[in-house]
Length: 249
Image (cartoon, rainbow, N blue to C red; front, side, top):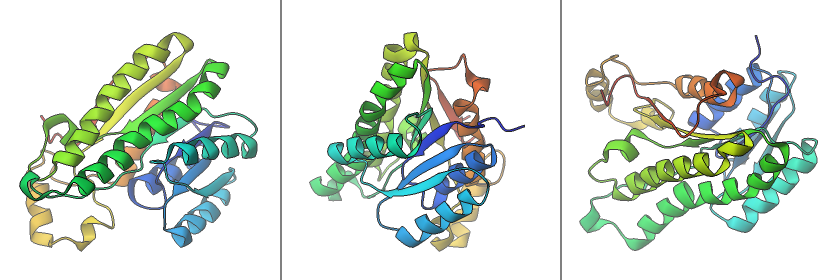
């Protein structure tokens, strides 16, 4: 059964990792996928080709979600290309610039807040008018377990991800009466091409500390997004779902 048949979805930051996993699972469930990338053009175009081969419409857009004007322009273009409708927005674009607070520069703090948190404001604001007109829609914000519990050496990242949770709950309260839902997902330790570069002993130590004894996969996160994007979660809004193998339990 295809849970997202014919729905139009925007995913920010989907040329690799979790974003790519979401795009693939959503296309398998019948969604048309518009997704953004910042610099990885070759992987983005390859993903566009793969998704179109699944029999859905897919298109990659070079766009910086941290820029308000670019976000507005992107949504206008997606509406043109995807028959004037947007059903789901997934705010997934994000970066890390980790350091202890005493060594963290203002530039590194600002960059993480802009790309991780300001982008959520930009994109949500840009799609809001369309969702209100439709009187339907699902917004999914990619937070983190670090936004729930904090983490030494990640004050900028934790602040951005915690801010996203407050934003999510406020939007859920503002837009609920128009049948627009807004939820957040807080991934734990997810194994992607980025974690492959880390020391195997360190990674295994992290796995051993998780009740399910493994890192998560992009597909684990994509399946949680699938629930929030589909009608299965029609009575769920303003929630934060920890997808972390029991890490925060």
